[in-house]
Image 1 (cartoon, rainbow, N blue to C red):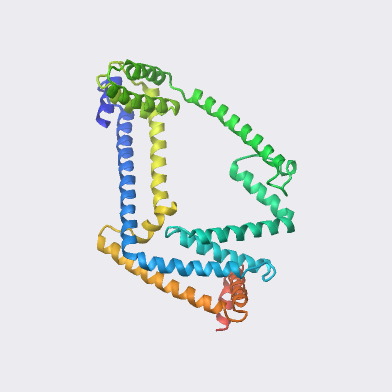
Image 2: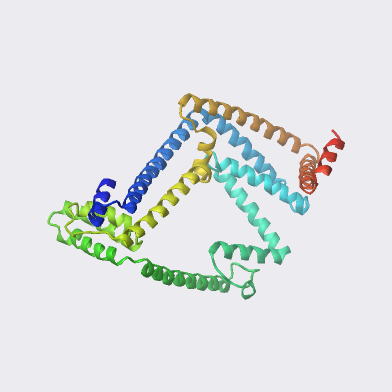
Length: 370
């Protein structure tokens, strides 16, 4: 496809040196390579996941069962009467960390999910009754996540479930949607390349399904028409150019691309390259269902992967044993409260270290008790 695009550009500018043509060709090749690399990476991660499940299934099952026991104990034995606010934060942090850990291995059981949901809902109800400021903060965070610019004073932040509250939020969502629609329409007008608009209309006539005689041909053209319409709606000029090669390989529409057209294509190619590179990074480092396997087990050779899984299995066993010992410690008289108080004390000690200058830090380590 890239070779055909080069031919088009040469026809547009003649045989003279065309730096934009070369730029488009290079970027097109890079896009094709990035797409292939991402697909290859996802296939590799599926392979890693399947291999891990085959090798580590029994270890993971045992580990998850122990972790769920740990979370259930924390939930069943935690109350705001038993712990201070700072201590409650420690308990909640432990629960959240364990839940995240379990999610990496396929998800929380229905029983535990229901238990944690009830637990957190009850905490929220208690907080709403005790602290109106928390409600306002929660409201502001919720509005920020929804992208709504509203004044908290215009709402009753103490009753998120009231019909009046929901209606006001619904109206704000409609206003935001209307504004975004208007803004998108304006951006389309500003982005519209007249030459590509003409090309789109010519290609739409060629590929229109109503002109087909056979059902098979009609289905094929319906698919092309849908892709062409989507590309035009998004003002995706490179995609339109790619579809043109499929729809009109003989260039019956007499397409030529001027310098402005080429600039528009280059701009979009840069955007596509950026998106694909970001997607590659997210697959490796951000997406929960892929980053775990990439970061822990990725390797070229299968034996290296198996060695990494073996080492990970050892860590699972060690972690499971530590968790079992914690549970035993918790079940001793006042063991649970003592453990949480000790964790809070350690956390505060660590926070104090951040506030020390270099000389104070050296003095602290020299004088600490063991």
